[in-house]
Image (cartoon, rainbow, N blue to C red; front, side):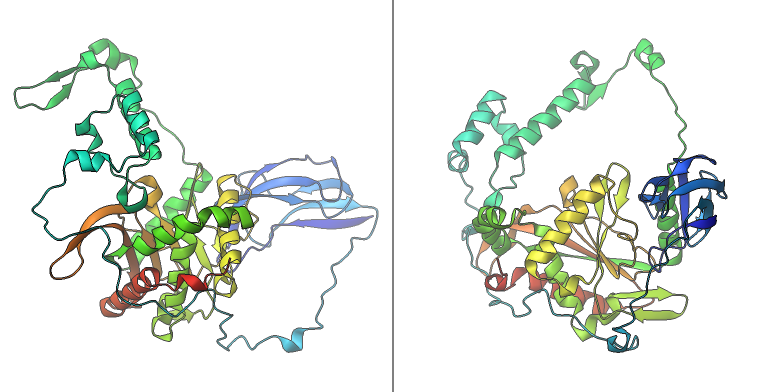
Length: 449
């Protein structure tokens, strides 16, 4: 008889411990090779540990809900056959690069930029002359007009809707989002509970019976995932002197190009042509410039580890909280490969099916809070990283085109939060501006399809 140890796997240099969620087998149970015997969680990722042999679970050394270091022995399986040990292939060891060398992989992004001049479409030479309501409605599609009539949306309410379509046009999705939000408000408050006060403010009255019927307090234990998020955020906010700067990015060219190519891209590759991939390219291209190397780094105590490869974290909103899957060596991927990776890991993050280690070892993080409707935000650094980039919702804004013209443009706000111990405001401003230029003036013709 032989014994095989059940071991907590190692999942990257930044993960030091994991939590055992539950055992799927009890002591004395038979197990088969490849069969899940326990579930665990590490850095917000739930995973299963499988048996490596056929045998019997002899001993459970670590109980459910135990927090254990990686590499810990969790249990013992007794087997009749000697466990096979994996062979180590060292045939290519001599070809591995020196760990002290700084080597870039092939670039993902076109580094040459288009002309700095942006076409002045939608410009307004006489800003004092207001557009008529009739001309405004002429830009609505028949489908949008039908939805407006169907849901009885007044002109006053229509003017409050911010269009997310091309050049700020109101789309059918914008109408449906408005209707859904209106229905939620109507369902949550009875009209008879509303009255208008003398100062024209709307007040809400609840009868004593309604108040007594509500549960006034609830006490909930934080989930394992939420506890880890809380711990990381506390460390981030209390140990890192963080500064955030903001700037606006004109998305006119990107939106126009995306609208023209997204159907063909979908049909050829079965992928969405996403803003996330294009913005990621702008970030990666900036990081590759030697002057900005200290934004793609890890800081531990007094040592700064500058990375000459890019492991890009993509913050993803899931039902279990914010999870950040990592695109390893993102700078070595082509445009198609990067699109595939981002779509794959974000989908699997939402279904809690990421593999252990896929949320570890990021060198810089990108978070897009625009999908929530937020125009801007102040992202917190995920230690031991030294910077994080966030983008908001694309909104139509009036901006100056030149000295005599103004125009309506789709504008996206970009936020760069950086560790002030490592980088100063001047270099951070230049880094953010370079990202802006990369996105606004990217040579889109070089993006292979």
